[in-house]
Length: 251
Image (cartoon, rainbow, N blue to C red):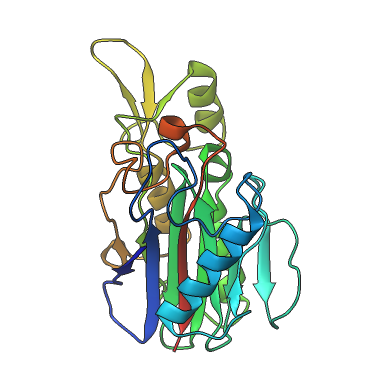
């Protein structure tokens, strides 16, 4: 397994990370390192991976909090450990030593941090969550814990790039109906004429719209579909495959 450290523009004591597949077996879409337990993998493998991750990042067993994601905009507030937070696509907390994380395999993982008050967030954004503004809703939930948009830093984890994310015109129409500007977000492939959406740019639009500053937003530029031996990718491997885990905790 490999853990990549993600860095916020303004620094701070929060530890942000994303996992990689490790030594991937081309015949096994769940190899080598998968912490997601609801995508068809064997539970013993998932449990073992989660235990290794907790040990590697230095948190107690049971302090890695994830949820079943449903491509919605529900934000769970993690105020205790040992609970089932059900279905949600984002989490926020101000608890120290508790890692919150989201699973992705082409969708956009986003981590948020207000270092002044010690509030963090993690969000999963597919095209539906992106269109519905889950980034801004996550920041709003953080603000209810004392954060302020102008202080919030954000970092994007690996996700599908705009060149790989081809969509139908009906998806473009839905984006426009929600008020997202086509300029800078929607692109046309000059060869195929098909529409492509830049999900990172669309989520950045929501971040700026809720009061965050451009200088506080960091992108990795890594595409999951272009690198299926490094990251899980549903478009490259199929839906029945593992998931990358992108998370954050306060130390």
